[in-house]
Each structure stands twice: as structure tokens, then as C-alpha cells.
Length: 282
Image (cartoon, rainbow, N blue to C red; front, side, top):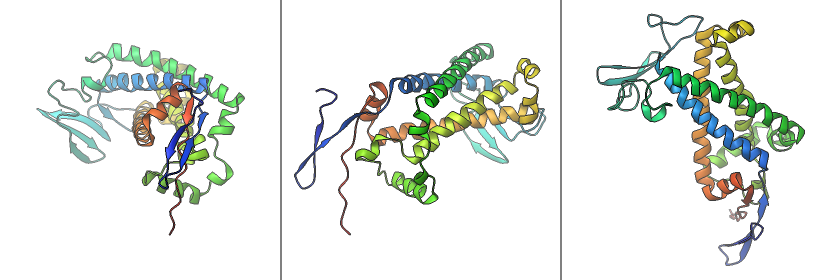
């Protein structure tokens, strides 16, 4: 079947309605999506290796084992635990202690799969450059192609709290956009993508620079902006957690909305618009 050939959906009254196929995702967007996906996964996993060297987080300019951390992933004997701002949560078998690891994060989620701080840093720093270069290229493309203003920027009617609340309720009920409304991003998608592109990723990069003594010499103001290396490390970790949350919700929405159709859109650019729902009479 040709990509332009519509499929037919049988409605409840027995009539047939064609699903329209549209070219929704342009090639530069698809390329950046997959490069960014690979880069983020590698950085999260290599970052877990780096975190394992000292699995504690602090606020302020200094941090050591005898200071008061706000987060700890540790173990006592064969019991793992997560300490978070005064609350301790058992994590045996997942974090802190597993059958195969006594590190904060187990080998399943680290790069490399064994503990090597040096190799973890090499992976992390190399893909940090990939992240920075690809992000700059994507933002430049988005501005000059009008992808940013046309596809990602919130329209006037989407900025109201009432509109956002309707979108939230629709997603909670798994009622995703159909017909022509599915051709473009909805308000929640736009907010999520803009937050990743212009908040989380830049903060990850800048806090990573703040933790580097070499870069501190070139950009000393970063230490003042983020309140010292330990505060920068904590913000770095929180941004990474935010990216993990985004990835989880993003993949969940892909599965619920129709993984084959969504993946085809991100691989070929072509997307089959779901047939509009029939309005139920009150």
C-alpha cells in the first residue's frame, strides 16, 4: 500500500470513513529526535556511573561524607536504601544493593556495565558535546524554518488555563486528538518539548560546566549563578531526573496513542490521522 493511500475505518453505524495520511514530521526533526534520544540515554547511563563514585547530593559549595546530604543512595550490609530529605525508603534489589552490585545504581543502568569512573566520564563528556552541537543545530533550524514559531510555540488560545485543563482531562481519560487536530502538537506536548529544549537540556549543560574546574576558570560566574559545585551537582541530578520522567511519559503516550503510527511518523515522516470520534448525545 502506498503511503498516500488512505485506510478505511468502519464506524458504529456501518459507514466507512477514510483515515487521512499526512507528512507530519520533517527530516531534520526526525534526525535530531533520534540523535537526541541516543545521546540522552547514553548520558543518563554514564552519569549513573559517575554518580556511583559518590552517591550523595548536597546544597552549597562543598560536600563530603560528613556533611549533611539531602539525598543518599546507599546500603547497610545487604540492604539498600534511598534517603531523601529526611525520609528513608528501602530499595534492596533495585538501588544500593542488588545480587550483582553494591553500587547505588546497578550495572543494568550504567555505562560501562562495570564500575569505571574514568570510562564513565569519557562516555559522558563525548556525548555531552554531541548533545550541545545537535541542540544548537536544531534550534537554528527551528528558528529559520519557522518550526519553532509554527509548530512548537503556544497559540494564543492555548495559553489559557482553561484550555490546558481541558487538555489535561482529555489525556487523563486517554482521549487523544483525532482528525485534523492530530496533525499538530497539542498544548501539553508543546510545553513538554519546549521545557526539554530550553530548560532541562541547557541546565544540564550549564551545571555540568559548573562542576568542571577547568571550565570554572573560563566561566567563573557559573559558580555564583548555581551556588557552588555541590548545588550545581544537585541541580544537574534533578534535571536528569526530569529527563527520565519526560522519557517515561513520552514512551507511555506513544504506546497508548498507537506505537506503530507514532513510530512511522518519527521514521518516515508519514502519519495516519485517527478518524474523528463520534459525538455522543447527552
